[in-house]
Image (cartoon, rainbow, N blue to C red):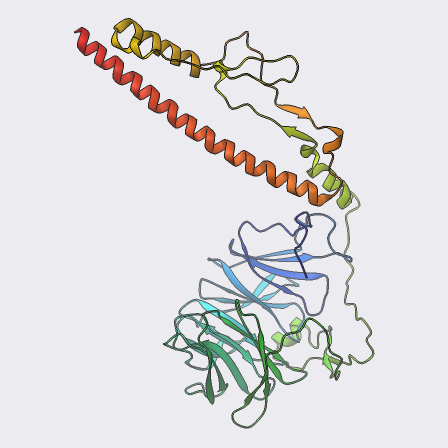
Length: 439
């Protein structure tokens, strides 16, 4: 835990904010992302992580007309990815071929959530029209639908194993947070509906198929509630909401293996299969890394240390700009500092026309262009040996301090420019008055 280094390598390729990311369950090197730019992209993350910014994607999927909010990998079929956009459409992609195999257009409003059942034969969705739908994704047919939570905020859903039940979280019309359990074949009325609390954060449900546990995590909450799922009413039993950063040794039930049970072709042809299971008792790390061809002509990746040296090269000098008016300073041979000149204006000169013109010329000299014989203000000065930063933390502090000083100077410059405009308006008004008096 902690703050990530601001120099850490990033995946940068979308033209808008990234709204969702999902790792491929059958390939540890592949990650999918969707964005505000209406696209879905697949990326290859090399072994050991990134050593520089990644800008080249493997596959780019176009089809949505509005931003793409959610993506979901199929739990058993390889290369099947679903994406839900603000165009009310769900696209079923075969990413191996980079093409759409089905478009689900049954929604009438923004989609809030998607969830596959255990074998990926059914898809549950919630949307802004407050409806829960169970869909057959290969044909795009709605098998059942019903009114979900009546609140105005987002609702989420997840299948509860292979029991034929769906759990949803949402809000009541009085803004109370709720969870409800539904029969996937009859969504007219929930089997059970319970109030959680009155907080405002959206609740995200996560179901663990291995232990029949469902976890409810609210946005902005400081705890995670976990429940046991059973076959009889009330179907969900609250256990605890204890939160600890220390792992606890416990039972090791079999879990889903990082290998597909079906190919994309098999799933599209109508086959269903439960996921392959593996044992976690051995503690063996399973790798699903797949080979990827590389271009020999591509430039070699630079070490992160070399990148850091380039990024902070501009901090080797300290900027000392002089923001005083150009006509009021004179250079000094010893320390390159300027001395302030007090510009005194004789108030008595305002009584005569001649002295009014003199004041106008003085203002022109003060705020006009610099004369040719003046020496330029030094932009940089070398830092002393004692100012060399020994740690990155000191370097960050110095950088933040300089940024704050720069903001202060910008405000002072804006104030001085405003004062110049006021003086120019005053001079123009005095000249107009003199012309009227002369005429």
